[in-house]
Length: 245
View (cartoon, rainbow, N blue to C red):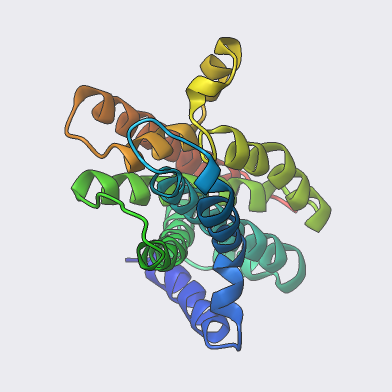
């Protein structure tokens, strides 16, 4: 349980920001804007085989919201605490292992990602969207949060400034948000790009949230998400273990 103080610190910071006026609205404002503009506006003119565009869009926005919040919370906080407040250095001087530090950070990122995506899910249902929530859906959402929270640890440890943090977001997070099947079916893009996009983790989250079936394809997609999550987690542990400033 040596990860618990790390996790508790993040939760206390989370609680402090949570009750600020408008902060909860700010974390889901962008995906909510997409939901209204595309799902309720443009979506009336878009046809998706087997469902309405709103029903197609909502799971994708939930996936993106969980990714963005899990990643951004950890990467930004870790960058700031490491470069300005020197919190990481305190962790390293304490009897806390690198694995415990990463575990505490990742669990906090998962909590934040699940909260934000749950809020969007409720709002989407109020707008008339339909989502099939079952254990596969919940597991996929949790693994997505784990993967990008762990990636946030890696980015937070490697960033030398806020500009570096933004660069990682622009080159990795933002392209996945737009090209991994969030706003349009993957069948609409060229085959060569499809093969590249199928490598990315958010693609498999989108597939699982839209089709949370008990099937071999779902098992493969869950395995891919677990692989990315484990790789980022171990990468974060390795970076912290070899960290020197």
